[in-house]
Amino acid sequence: MGHYFENLDDKMKQYFSILSEEIPEFLEEYIQTPVMQKQAKISVTCGTIYSQMYDEMWYSSLDHSVGVALIVWHFTKDKKQTLAGLFHDIATPVFKHCIDYMNGDYEKQEFTEELTTKMIAESKEIMDLLKRDNIQLEEVDDYHLYPIADNDSPQLASDRLEYTFSNGFGVVKEFWNLDELAEIYHNIEIQKNEQGLPELGFKNLEMAEKFTFVMSELSCSYIDSKTKFSMQFLADVMRKMADKNLITVEDLYRLSEQEVMQKIENCKQNNIAECFKKWKNATQIKESEIPPGGIYSVHIDKVKIRCINPLVRISENEYKRVSEVSSKAKQDIEKALHFKTKKYAYLDFDF
Image 1 (spheres, one colour):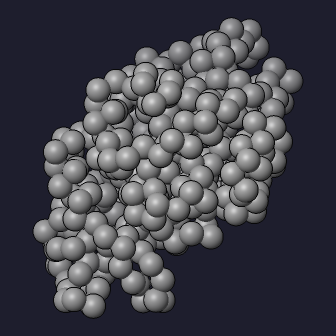
Image 2: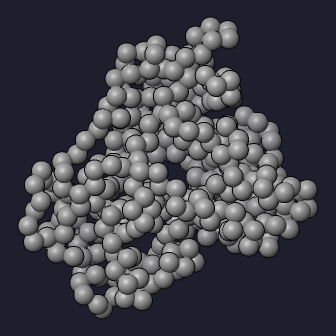
Image 3: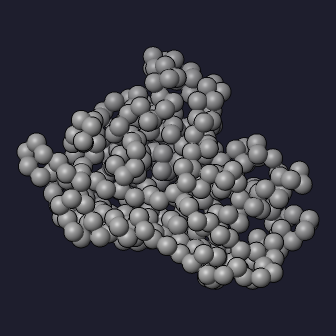
């Protein structure tokens, strides 16, 4: 099938074969373009994987993008929609959403999306392939155009489905094995939502509830104290280094995470390298309701809540949100929506 799919380990091959029994031939050529290959060196977990506070599985931004593309292909068999899914994170920088934290965008986390068109347009390799395939740039540079690829929260689309699946089989935590994931996936179909638009939904309540439970647990982990601390700390590290001209914003899009970490660890100014090492070696975060004096702490009130309230089939032509028909699912969703941490997260260093 080509380099990317051939070189996957058995678990990833099995996972992708669940998402789509058929791997479309055109996909490999687009995956092999240099701009897409950069995404192979960026972790989906926003850099948290590099601290001992986490027990995470390596999963790249490229892996996530391929997964989204395969889900879109499985449900639509549409080349343009599939490529829009593949390209949706093409402008992702090192440490992923930490760049949003650098720019103070805690809630929407959409800063990098503005660069998507530019990244595709400046890739000669992608533009040549699109021309060959008779596809216009504007047909693939915005996956929001296609409801199966992306839609507004708390609806279910391929992007949210993929990161919930992969994060739930070990990227963030292990909630299900691949057999369980396959059972849930094959219970999903295209349904019509309240606006009459196509949306991914579940055929039965049991599978919808299983999915919603894991989604809720993961949603809380995305905004727990150690994650908010880690993302803000990495953002502050990069901002400090940028202020001292030790790194540029362009570097965050040009270099791999390993190369950026090397720059951080070799930094001789202030205590940047020392604090980074302490964060890497930390095994747990400290929390407080009052500001801890004399040390670096993080206080973030409003963050992006990643919550999904999927549709479920009620009768032949009737679909409802799972929260409307299941008190259990409603409780799980409420937990995700109202999850709170202590006000301050910190480690014992002054940064």
